Image (cartoon, rainbow, N blue to C red):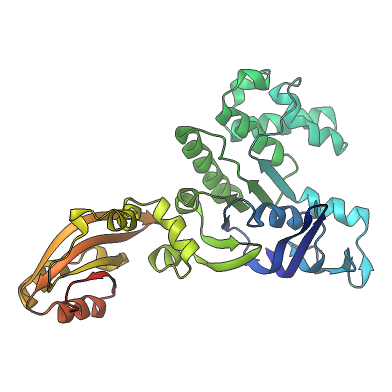
Length: 357
């Protein structure tokens, strides 16, 4: 479990102050895959470095696992009113693994030596190191790469080595800072699948930093959206995709869906997005059970409505379907047809209205 309360961090640079974190509060349950998304400069990488105290926040509090509440006073981490000791800090960091965008492997060391490095640093005996590294190689499916050097590996294989190294000391938490950003689509999918398997097999809590909503959609349980150092939206991934509240959240979601083209098509004056008098261009969102309902055919019969589907998409999030559709609806009683849809748990957003004079 990770609990963050009212965390702040400002960097004082020659060019001026940069407020990286502004009153950030989050609660991440044990065993969750928790996504943090934002554009460059949003504060997400600073947040993840504050979780393992590679960066010390200016103020706020932090609880990681059984660390007890770490309160930042005068720029120093304190536990029960006393300064956090090096031994306590070392224990906290050993319980947290971290992987990075560019892998951070030792180029002149083999795969085995890279994974063994934190174990040697901790004073583990040679026989135990050999056993543990062998287990980790099997866990990330790199048993045959034991004596290979990083230069001989693909990007996806390098990230697997980095994951194995991060798990060497049996951490409860894995921090992933843009770990798939340098990978091609196939390697990205493979690494995300591996992270999901590790979460399920080991009960590993994963905090996943990214700027790609497709990554969040693929494996995360919950997500926090950051902008200018603040958390502007937070919640269950399914709920966020079904009903985003903030413009930046909608922008991220649009980037991962074919329906994201709709706004640009409207702006470009696409004939597909035009409405005639008496018609409306609508976005319909179908949650779970309503995805398979025949409600569209029902409104056609009941309200004599004509529905022209422009774009449609169905995603599977956390094992549940989420459907969306852009359509032009017309007929004798368009408003009653839309109210019928809303009554059947279908979200309706009017994008263009040809019924208004």
